[in-house]
Image (cartoon, rainbow, N blue to C red):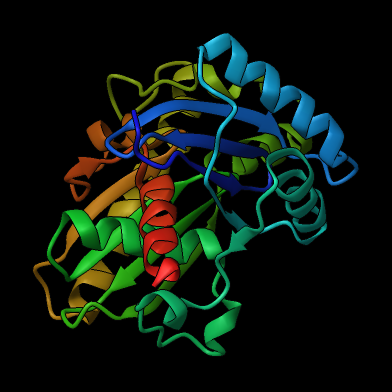
Length: 261
């Protein structure tokens, strides 16, 4: 494709997601553990290998990044400059790419949350609530006027369950990823009880919080999920209407286009 290739990087607390956009679609998406000790050369060598394995040309024309881990800003900046010969654009201020932010102070909103709002706004009409399932679960609310209003930050489902297992010696450790939904809310065994409390309880909390936010925004909000465990909760939460796995990357891509101007 002759379209300019874009590299979008979403640096989260646990993983960095690298997405390659070829002008019409995401042709690759890779995950790297977030490690503040990592160097630009480690990232560069890994990324170069990933490009080769995917059969993609080592030719990126734009780099855009949302980073919620401050020590990662420097390695990403150097990765972009030294390995790709480009300045990286970091999402910092919603106003810079046309997103009005009503949060106080506006610059304190995580860049990933701004990207989520922007990504959702390009697919759906506001008002909107985005639920992003990561290390923490973020709720991001966009009002009827398309302004980023704010939201909520919940401990991620795995964070909560890990803390429970650490403190309750007798409970069998249910691996986070095998935390499926039980058939019934009333568990008939310890494992079923854990699944009910952790998975169904979490889904109920999300539905409850989404309902309260919806009321505050005047009703009629579309609730969109993204992030690692979003697909599972699309089925479990009555309020979540759709799952958009590339929402954060899409927001980054749109921000990059607007920052060009």
